[in-house]
Length: 124
Image 1: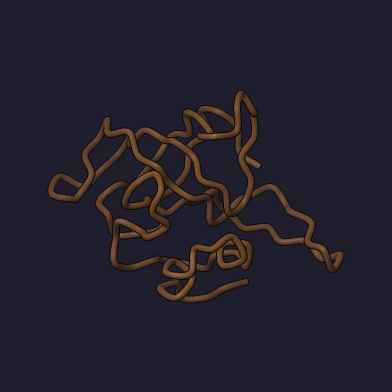
Image 2: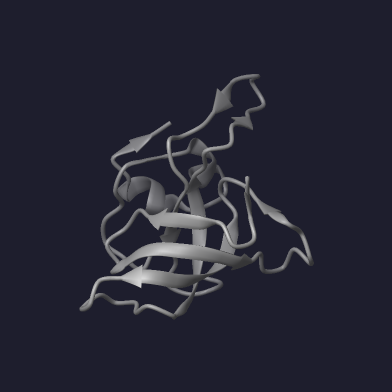
């Protein structure tokens, strides 16, 4: 569960290092974003020769969250950090980078982000 202005690490090799959440498209004025949801963010830190630059507005999907999330089977999932993967565009569910670092939640694949799930090292 992330709210507006939450800082997240970027879990791909698109060139961004930190992203700040600034909105949730198509959800009205909802305050919180959860695992597997697309968010709008602004790049706060980036590598000098990456695909995205500092200050760019990007679309990303939340892949890790510190706040635990209850699953339908009664178990909970939580991670040590908040992280996202930058998407190629608003409507396409493909990542901008070609590698995904660290584990991701199973909810990512359930929401239709199959390319991100196949590139990930581990799925929990």
